Structures are given as structure tokens and as C-alpha cells.
Image 1 (cartoon, rainbow, N blue to C red):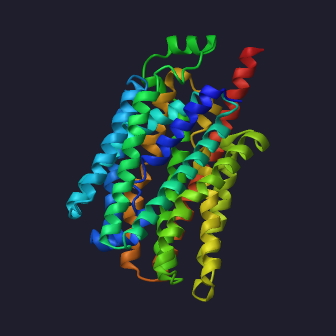
Image 2 (cartoon, rainbow, N blue to C red):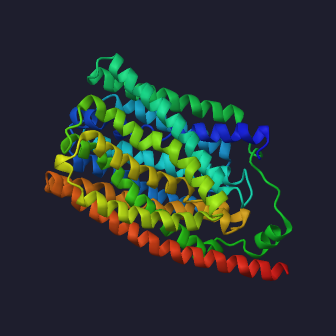
Image 3 (tube, rainbow, N blue to C red):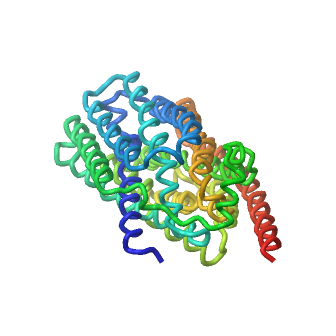
Length: 421
């Protein structure tokens, strides 16, 4: 159980995590308006996401070296405010190259300067047995914030006529929210808020492994990172369920934005606690949970490829895609939890999170562009089946990596028990 002070900090961290990605993820609620008013194709939207991810990946690598050193209060507040200012610039309707430039800077403000530090702050709120629940409820909280803010932006969009003015108003709304959160964090958060006492074994570990090379040489961290990699590669495909339902099932445009919000945000509220509680309470291992869900994802994608989508009702198609999305979000809720399960030294947690993010989020550098271009080159159902097939391959590879991770963590636990005895 967390203390009241830690619950307050947890809520603040959740607010940060649930607002900072609204602008980089503008496509989730405004995919069709982005195409229309920014004059972008599927492939160009994918390119913007890939440019963002390329910068993000480099940023995560750099953050390995400063995630445990920079003052959290200043870094997180500056990143939030800068993200809001970039959103204000978007309301000027920049051209394609301007869009690429803004999404590249989002990689610096949202990911390099914020995400690893945010993850470390969440992880330090609990012990190794609470990591699945912590990250699970963190994702749930983010989902609640995401949903409220995104639906509010969609309401603003509709209020201002569902046209260009409404689109600009929605972006202004996102920008104002994220700037306000940045100001709150600056005045409320303290550097010692998430500090946890380090036990004797961790102190010895910190003294004997002060070099960053100890993190880079840790095979367990690399396996965790590639676990995240394959979850995220599948997750990238969820974005294209939006045009899938619009193009194949002829989902009305009025419902496309609402579906996008449900697909990307509401599922976090389901996936977060389900993934966290099953991994901690039932399986007692986030790594085992990831292993089983990779297998389920692989089978589900094969079924999705074989379904007769042309003759299925739209609501059944929505149920199938949302059901699969829920599985992926349970994985996203806990894919960093194995860092705590593996008992990585608290002194190296920030660097481990940064390395995990560096490798883990790398699929976004190419998956969005890859999936988008496949759909542009193969119009109709064929293109979507190819995308689902690639996602299935990623899920299969994830299952293999997670099996190796489970074996390694079990071996580490046996060694620690033997040493204690």
C-alpha cells in the first residue's frame, strides 16, 4: 500500500504521463482532420511518427547518461511546457516539412527529457513485488486522463464546427492542458518525493558497479528491452485499425475519432489493472505474463487475417479490433515491470529504463512508415492483411524473447536465494 504522500505523487506523475503525449499522438483523435487540413497521406503521417521515433531513439540513448542525474522537477516541467509551445505552433498549419520538424522536436521534449525520468519516478514508489501493479495502475490512470482530455478535445472540435477552426481549437486545448501540468509540476514536485531508502545490498551494488558499462553489459536488461521492442512493434499497428474500419467496414467519419480515442486511451483503463493484477497476483511474474500474451496475440492476429471482413457487421469488426487492442494494452501496462522483478539496482534504474526505452521504442522509427506505405501501395483489404501478418511475426518473436527472459530471471532468483542461504 502506498502512503497518502506517495498516492499524491503517483497522481501527479499519472497526470504528466497522460497529457504530454496528446500532441504527438494527435492522430488518435484527429486522424482524418490531419489528413485533410495538414494535407497528409497515410505514408506521410507514418513518416512524421517515424521521424519522431528516430529522434526519440537517439534521445533515449543519450538519456541513459543523464536520467539519474538531472533534477526531475525542472526537466519534467520544461519538457511539458515546451511540448505545449510546439502545439501552439501547429495551429499555424505548417506544411509537410514543418510537421516533420515539430514531430522531431516532440521526440526531444516528450521522450528524451521526460519519459525515462517519469518511469523511474513511478518505479521507485514501490518494491520489487509491487512493480506490476504500480505500472498497471499507472497505465490505468494515464488511460483515464487520456480519455477525458481526448474526448474533451473532440468536444471542442465539434463545438467549433468540426472544420479547420475546430481542429485548431482542439490543438489549442491540448497545448493549454500540457502547459498547465508543466507549471503544476514545477511548483509542487520536490526532488526527494520519490526517494526510497536503499538497502545494504543495493549500497554494495552501487559501490561496486558505478560504471554505466554494468548496465550496458547486463543481458537481463537487454532481454527486457527487446521484450518492449516486440510489444511496441505490434502496438504501432493499432493506429491503422482506425482507417481499417473506415475503409473496409465503412465506419462513419463521425465515429472514427471516437473509436480512435477508445482504441488508444480507453483500453488503457482496462489493460492497466488487468495486466498488473494478473502478473503480480496470479502469475507473480510480469515476464511470464508477457510470454503468455505474446502467444495469444500471435494466434489472435492469424484469426484476424482469416476472418471474412467483407461480410461482417461493423460492430463485430470493432469488437475484434478492440479485443485485440486490449491484449496489447495489458502488455504495455507491465512491459517495464520486469526491471523491478529482476531486482535491478535502484542506483541504475533510470539508466535501465532509458536503455529499455531506447531499444524498446525503436519500432516506431520504421513501423508507422512501413505499415502506412504498405496500405498506400496495397489498397483495400489485402494491405491490411499484410500489416496484420507482419504484426503476427513480431508477436511470435516476442514470445521467443520472453521465454528467454523468464528463464534468466528465474536463474537470477535462484542465485540470490542461494546467496542469502
